[in-house]
Amino acid sequence: MKKNKFSKNWIIKQKRDIYVKKSKLEGYRSRAVYKLQEINDKFKVIKNNILVIDLGAAPGSWSQYISRNFSKSKIISIDLKDIEPITNLVHIKGDFTEEHQKMNIKNYFGKKVDLIVSDMAVNTTGNKSVDSLVTGELCLEAMNFAIEFLNKKGNFISKLFMGSSFNEIVALGKKSFKDVDIFKPPSSRKDSKENFIICRNLR
Image 1 (cartoon, one colour):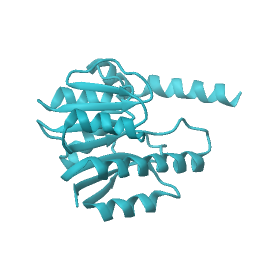
Image 2: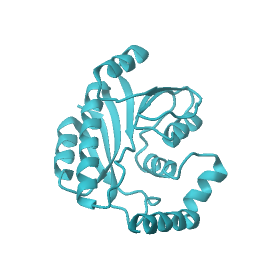
Image 3: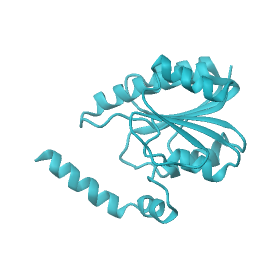
Image 4: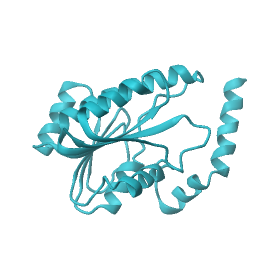
């Protein structure tokens, strides 16, 4: 019963959500695109002609936004799921932590990249402490990946939740990047615990 009630509430929220409507009108695959847009409006981390890796990319709205708005950018997305084709994008179906996938990415670009983005989160269990912990672990994995793949002055954006791993994530960010900010975009739902960490200029 609880699951059905949760699903009905989610459907009602989706129908009322202005960002869901806007994303459909503008041809984006999810409302999450506006979070990245608002992050970039504030922090100016995405530019033309850059090399980008999108971790946990499905359904692909973040890659869509970069491809549409920043010319000559070259993007690799990686996710356990398939995604529909996007201009200037190569998609890998797989796990970004696996060594052979890392090698595929390195071989494709041939050098370090400018930007790594991640909007990954676990499928929610209903237990916010568990959800924030597991999503925090994903964020740490993504940050360690970014430290390995970014060039000097490279930038990293990732979703994270307020929770037990929050301080550990921020500490690693400050150790590894010159500039670190925590930001909740206006389009993020008010009842959500999600924030985003924006790390600029890899040390």
